Image 1 (cartoon, rainbow, N blue to C red):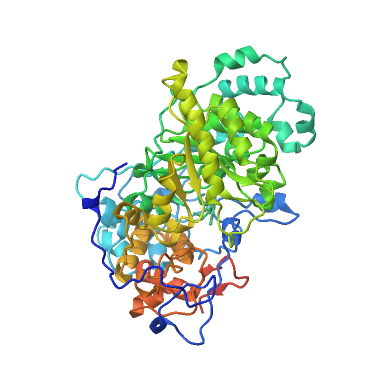
Image 2 (image 1 turned 180 degrees about the horizontal axis):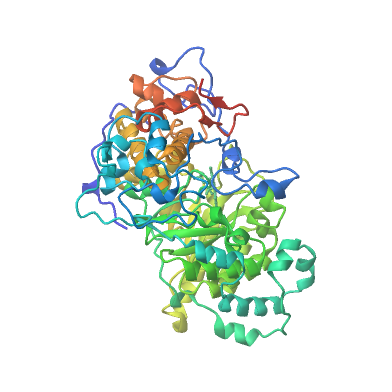
Length: 618
Ligand SMILES: Cc1cc2nc3c(=O)[nH]c(=O)nc-3n(C[C@H](O)[C@H](O)[C@H](O)COP(=O)(O)O)c2cc1C
């Protein structure tokens, strides 16, 4: 990680920005300069608690809803359906080797390209962004920009000369349908986790866990209750020194972010200076059951490796072991495996997952040990909160146990309790106290000659980081190696550029629009440029804008620093585009998507998280 020297700092662009001027506005309200205030508008309304839990619903009938998780399935995500559905074997007319296993007569999809083309909506104007990026278009005749890479006379697609056509180009950690099917049938050998589960079963009083198992879980797991054999475990412990090395010191880290932290967003963040990114949280059970939507989560863009972490959630050591072994054997580009012990939402909490593990340290430690043993060379890390209840922080003691009893390579602490809402600030004093515990531990390890080759355990703080000042203040604490940034990196994707430059950058509206355009292009490369891909890209771009619109340009603020928790009064930008980018009206978000993705079709609907009504195009 590069150090920032005085000569590298850029000159301050905005001398006019007054610092530490007393806010004239009420507490919690962003101090917008008088001339940008709009009289009579609507005050912005954000709900980050709701945003964090959007994909995982709460309520009593969880099991059915739970099945709907995966790629943002909670809300009504109606896709525009194509009139004629084309068989995938004819999507690329240049490739004559693909055969339909059913034959044209029996296939339930059409093989008639001309009829398909006649029923297809008019092309989106311009050049296909995917073709422009990689020299061919994997969406073939289904592409919504088909005219830019299709010769209607020959019926063939255009391709750049010598281009290498590769499935999932630029993306890693794809697993085959055959492997998923093996997982589904429980046919994938898992010798390492089987051994570890036998051991862990033997140290645990299995009964209370067994009683809480669902039928499905019992079917997946029949614990063998061997006698306690602590000696063999000690020998088989996978120490961090034997695993791939992490280096999180001063690393620029983007949090795991359900729904919004998708592959195109992370790719964008990598291009904007992030060193470490995480998958959206994946549940261990559907992973080991070979669920398609869950295995979409560990996929990454090649630019994310090294420095890509997969986050899992579970309350059972056997699930943790198997998921860890599956990830270790089936993926090739994972730098760390992270256990989620912070997720506040009811659905997970009631099952003992996420932040519920904070209340059950023995279980958490068992899971971490199991993951460490079963994940081979992939180091294991953990993300925790301060505790469950506001007045009962447990992280300090918990971290002592994690350090002494497991082999984690890093610990991230979000300085809030489960009970605490986002409206109250994260507690960085507490984070610092826990950092001191980790520092002491690392110093002791260094003194111990036998462990001289063991890397330090990294300690990362998390909560409310929104400016370079927040970031540098945190890492100037000797116990804190780095900061994990979540909402700050969504609202202000160039945050790491500011961290590097150690100054606020007053990005123009067109620069900010260019980030959204880049996201849209990455999204089309990822989801495809056909009807499905364009709809997905539009939906996730709207999700992204639901954060980016919250940015208030520093040039129109009366005082710095800006704060994450401050709500702006109604305001207007310095030009029309800036006003549009700051609009909290989701109809405007759709308008923005139309600049890159063509007109939203009748079937497109988008429901912002904090609204109960949906917007549908008229
Ligand atoms: C939309 C959203 C999704 C999140 N998803 C996850 C997740 O999948 N895993 C996780 O550990 N934390 C998740 N979090 C929590 C963040 O990683 C982070 O701990 C929290 O937002 C505090 O950091 P911040 O103040 O920088 O936003 C999510 C937060 C938000 C706002």
